[in-house]
Image 1 (cartoon, one colour):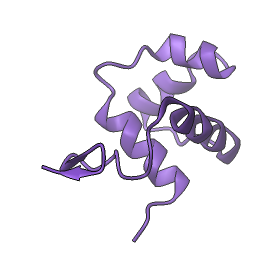
Image 2 (cartoon, helix red, strand yellow):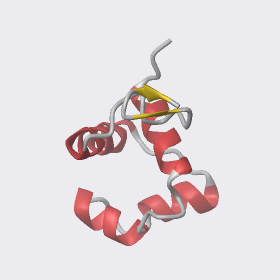
Image 3 (cartoon, one colour):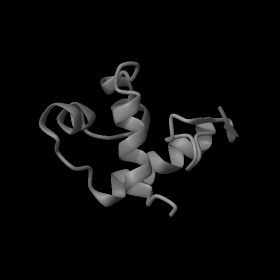
Image 4 (cartoon, helix red, strand yellow):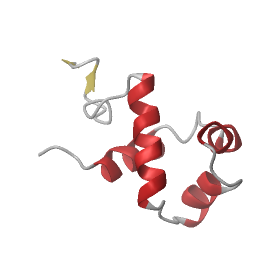
Length: 78
């Protein structure tokens, strides 16, 4: 089953939280300051508009729906 955009974005964010600069990502995507900090620290859900914008950004970076799975990398099963 393919993950939804929300599932893909949230999984990617949680798996990469150690390397994400929250303020930088907020600024890059044009979100209010603290948006991603609240997502991580208080488990606050991102609204659909922000999920879509983050999803488009991840696709632009080359992150696709299969990259959230730690068992695969570049669509090759390890």
